[in-house]
Length: 150
Length: 150
DNA sequence: CTTGCCTCTACAGTCGCTGTAGACTGTATC
DNA sequence: GATACAGTCTACAGCGACTGTAGAGGCAAG
Image (tube, rainbow over all chains, first blue to last red; front, top):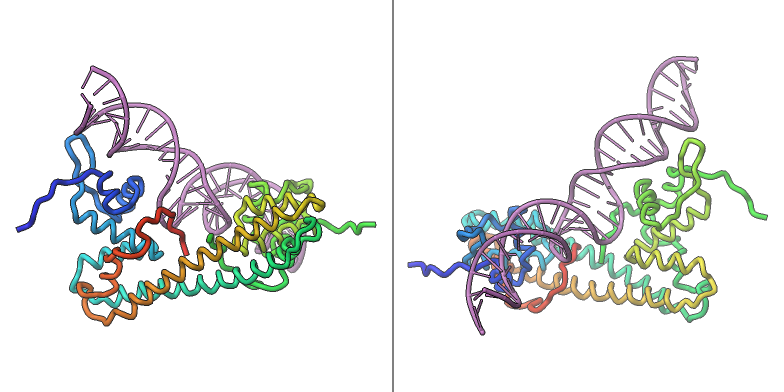
């Protein structure tokens, strides 16, 4: 027998899953969260399953998975008897993406390190940092990839 | 005596600095590039100084500097006799941001590694990857930072 | 009953661009 | 000169993943 629990409003769900209210509504609008029941006055009502689902989404987001992948993962969760190869593939792609980004950032770190250590104060005109940014001789010459935020 | 060079159109500037035409116009619209001269028919005309400035912007972007910082850096370039402490501060902040991001991504890498190595195939219901995403016991508990794309 | 938080919808803004539509211009070839 | 084609123009919408705002209504405690 299932225990029927008192449903909670969006604010309680927000605290339970540590996801902002506006973000929950956004997830609903893009189909990650499904349309919840409503109270008579129109307020959204959630149960403990929603807490789990939202926590799943949050953790997946923290791991950097894009929304589309998360959609796929949730879809797969509703078919527990299907093969988990797809799940594994998504996770491995993600790991590859993280490693690639780590490589890029390590290169940035080296260049920025070189810049700041070569600066010995003084005027902008003779600043090594400025010179370094101006000198685009090396590094990412034929690179047509989009620049990503930190 | 300065050598007066034939001005170039936006397409040539684009190739010279390896920045897309639309991006150049965008930089102009947000005040990073300044309003260029125009030909009789209204086409933008650039000189070699513009190539340098645009290359500077591109390299700064590749290093991950946000637009506001780049604006400041360009501003400082036009006052070559001012102190380069501000420049150095910006670069050091950037280095700090890169290192912080490296730390975050390294943590992600470890967790994803753990996930994919623990998956031994089978059904979604028993998939360790799924279980890992569901288990949000550890990792970033009281973290209110915005999740960043890779 | 009032106070004060909670929730609702709808839409604009964030960052750093990219893509598109539709019109005009410049150049090369025939 | 005609034609073809590449280049350029403006203006605006769209991306991802949200965040913030305005203005209205709901709900529980004192």
